[in-house]
Amino acid sequence: MSTLRVTAEVLTVHEHPNADALELAQVGLYRAVVAKGAYRTGDAAVYIPEQAVLPPGLIEELGLTGRLAGGEADRVKAVRLRGELSQGIVCRPTALAGLDLAHAAAEGTDFAELLGITKWVPPVPPTMNGEVEPAAALLPWVDIENIQRYPDIFAPGEPVVLTEKLHGSACLLTYVADEGRAYVSSKGFGAKSLALKEDPRNLYWRAVRGHGVAEVAARLCDRLGATRVGVFGEVYGAGVQDLAYGADGRRETLGYAAFDVSAEIDGTVRWLDAAELLAGELPLVPRLYAGPYDIDRVREFASGRETVSGRALHLREGVVVRPAVERYSAVTGGRAIAKAVSPAYLTRKGGTEYE
Image (cartoon, rainbow, N blue to C red):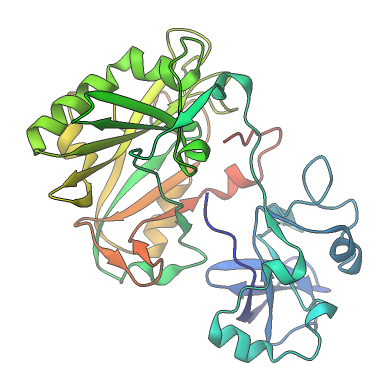
């Protein structure tokens, strides 16, 4: 999940092809449906992204009572309005009246706290929960930004790799050499430096034990001369999320696919190529493309049918974009990594969004 920032943005306004009273306000590569004439190209307004949870007063002010997602009808979600995908909300809240939004856009000011907007936290089903313990040595996963919000993470023509983004639950495993043990966690618990105590009923421990992930990490740690090795994978199947890829999370056919590796070597934590290090050792997320970066090509690969099962059983969630050679990004302030999500996935009916 990407980070939540509610910022002022300079808009580009486009015609809505199917509605005379509506237009499309563009932020990055996102487009949000707005009332015709409300904004002009070059105007600044506040952009509230998907997965934002709005307070009741702001919902009422924006005329969105009963129109947002979630049990409390307070969460921003992608929708189609007169056939066009609308992602996020463009507005000028009265709480910011009198502020120079163009200046705020240039400064990158985050208005989330001021507006009472919070980030939606997915629920945790019992099979993904469990008793936890402190794990300061755990190597955490990172939030991945959406390429549509930050299209400048990669330069046109830069060599990149696209892997399929799976709709499951992230499983974090860290093997610590001097302790000779592995810590297992979820993305949410891992962000708090908490590990799940071993439990044969727990989803992540079942996946780790079923695929020998700890043993693979231990061998890799020795091979790299590392102090710690983190193996990050997606656990998937029926009972995990609504997209199952032909696997069953309630039985031995629980799916697992590794997508990243990090290692602490000589005191420095580095991100390494999972495909290069884990091929033949663990199941891997499918690699869909390797070549020059082109946003249209990324969008093309983000949509379509899944390739995990080999049977194209259902739609694809999207893709993850990485540089061919790991590097720092000034745009993200960390790893150069991003995701692109399928519009069909965003607007599907009855989808689950657990941690």
